[in-house]
Image (cartoon, rainbow, N blue to C red):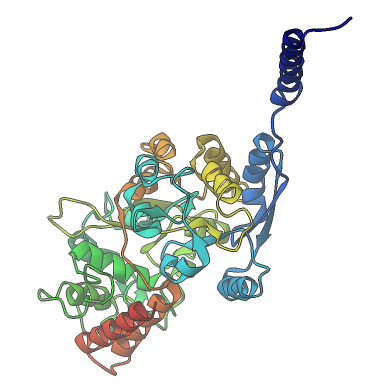
Length: 436
């Protein structure tokens, strides 16, 4: 049969249409398969705490395999720097909330298509923005937030007929006289609190000094975060906070109750030999393990009298994405946001954090999880304090600890007065800030 030109054209169009429909059916209906992704994550937390979270993430992201490497805290920073320099570092790694500044050249912020500042503000307390946001970009996200609180010995408080723990620092100082036990010669038989010393004897001594400065309204840096100001502000707010801390180790002062030669604060508290310490929730696991029969009370960290807004101080880690990761702009940040912002995964993390001690030891970071624990006996203090935590643009955690520690020790040793020590510390912090 001979076809006309017109018929041939019609047949050709029909064939093309049929082929197109068949192609759409077989190819268009087939979803593009996601790539096989292998992510390496580094951190200091135990494997058993995070493995359940990562396994749950894998259930909904079967193409992503997550390998976690736990690094000892004391060598974490050096191992991380060496690995990144050698090009064999992790895709995702933990960054301390005081260490963003010195890691900015190693990490990438979340793409706007993955996670935004508006989302962070709706999901997390404001301290997360203080610590992990620069220029409107989000550089890290946490699973938990820990804050300094007042830990007190209920038996010693009951014995001294102190009904409630101190809410202000003035009340705290007044309780020193009641809780402190002196020897005949004037020495201290039982300290009321472990404050005033350096890190040799007081856990988180530098953190407590910074907390007091923030509560006092001391400007730790200028508005640009390039110059430290806590040692020379016009109203001496930084010096007032520093002297308040030091008074507890001033032998000639009325609040003297501690010195650097005493047993380390956590150990002394666990042994029942000191009535109050200021420490993080994470310390409770250590204290409970050393003395499971100790009746420990937790209360909000004392505030400056007359202050309308409570101020707490936080220590925590966030997950950041290495700029050398193959998956930096997609899967690595997908992993970070899903693990930290999914309430179900956050709940798994909180539960797994307490498996070794029989109670939850981490404090939630997500607002939705915080709301669940407000009003509960064990977590209320820390849940509320996550919402009132404040921070500042630190050049690096270990450097700041070293600077404040030197200042405390120089005063305790009588080498210099507190004003001179604090101004020297200020100059050292300024140098650190301007070298970043």
